[in-house]
Length: 321
Image (cartoon, rainbow, N blue to C red; front, side, top):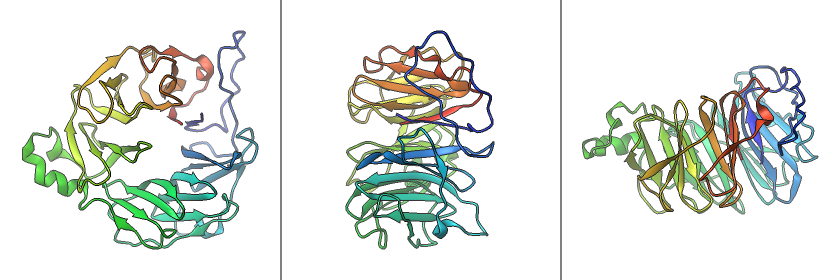
């Protein structure tokens, strides 16, 4: 598992506790204050070799399992006119993909030793926020306007998997009772993919969510069943959904698959919001959030205990994978 923080380079060392309760160890990074880390991935064929992405054109590389990281320069991604925000990275075997904003796509076939920049159409709707390596020379790419594209030839050609953007879908369904659809600003706040290719996305205002399954022509909008706005959503290891609300609160869907029926799970988040959840198995998962909140469950999410590993870190934990 890996955690992404707001910044790690300029913070004071944490006070050592007499109680050794945590499985986590803090790693210091050679980055400037203010850099936000956005994604992390390791090469499946060599789990000591990984990459960490962030704002301000940040790409870090490790070859010792994440204990130490160095700045990585990719000449094809250096442009004096842009300061890229690298949003997402994914590997399948030795093949890897990186997407960022402004629109940039990088591809490697040698586990990241070299990266090739793949040209992209200027007509793509929205900014690329997610990419998933799916097979040999194949990947799925998602934009913040709900466009999903697939490639099977190293990214030289892309095929649309949905017939229209989310805005167009909502314009057709605004009278169908989706609360907040008329206030939709046209972009996702978050998007997460299940291992079998289903997606769940949260609207930028957090007032409803959308799902998509392979073969569907459009995204399906869903009313939120919770009064508070949605912060993030994702998939449990058993195929069900988890849902986080702004201001704190963790909900789990009843059963597996796509659902609009959720129940709240008590968590001790010290009053801070939870920002992400990551499952290692159907039983074990971690939740991370504001001001170093770190929680663990070993019974599928029924009960959560707080890990104090990051209590002394003055930063938000944005992502856990």
